[in-house]
Image (cartoon, rainbow, N blue to C red; front, side):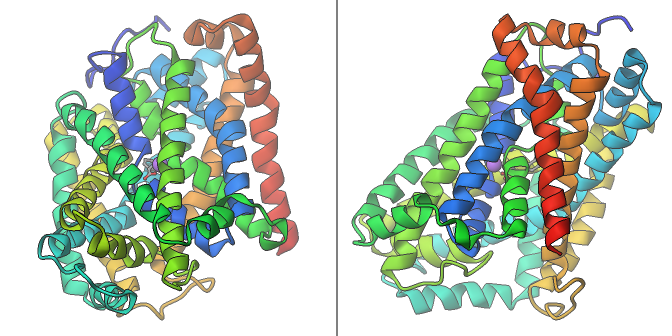
Length: 452
Ligand code: PHE
Ligand code: NA
């Protein structure tokens, strides 16, 4: 294979542009909506510790590997895996990894869009001052009313999916590159403000204790699996999103340094969200395990009572919407890139098809919060099922496969060539990707199966 210098879909204008896009993909609902609520459901500190460990030992090495595969292949994940397998003399069936990833992205986007729709609904609530001076009961009712209303949720889900498609149609460089540059720092500032408010609630210490003092009796095998799955989910790993973004990365950009920045930023945002939310939970005698509604039942309380709360609440939900948008476009990009490569159709048409299919599944997800809430499989409604299937099973397995391919199939010399790291750094990465990452995922799965 001759070394490709660019993908047919275009290329990031610089290293900085890639960092923005990849950080945009990573930082999203996973950090602000999901991390706090699953931490609450799984008892806090010990869960957080396992999650942080997984980010360090699995997330970082696998992100390096996934970006590297993308850049070397320079196509959609399916075709990238096809050509890399050929180059390595490996089984051509490795390209199924591209397929399962594309399907995972699809399934995730279906519910991601529904939750992002909730954030959009809350922009309007914030604007009309619905949080001002409300107590915990009123804020809870606001959320329950939204849950009970499928028409409203479908409206916002549709709006979000249309926004996603709009940006995907623009292509990678014209899409969110410019917006993310301002929105990320702004989101960061608002989170700091919220942490400041949390400090004034009187339950700050209790919140910090909950998050950071681990009690390992509170977690079981399934909680460990959830923490590991979340490390993949939050870093956008294991399904080709970061791979396809890597395929637009110019040659000779340091993948390792870039990865450390992205993973660091993602982790900081998640921890800040947790630090802002749990003091509110305890100060208002709310339920830490309230589930997917947790941020919608806590943060509006802060906005309703803090100085400048109207403005900050409005800004917060707008920023959450954009954070979700910069993630959602990466969920569908592998599918769109593949449709353009293999079905020979235009980018806008490919986006429309992929988006429409995802939208339809999303409508069913909306129903799982109301009229179909009793429809359960394995004791899970459709939303819970999709979340478990993707975040807990598909992403870790995809990540493990990426690690095995990068560590065992690909020629070491090719990996060295792509990564251009100092020898000691490369050695460390190679040991992690070859042995530690695949073994860790495997052991967690064994543990879960053993606990059944
Ligand atoms: N990382 C995103 C978040 O935390 C979600 C995501 C998962 C995006 C997988 C792309 C791929 O919100
Ligand atoms: Na994230």
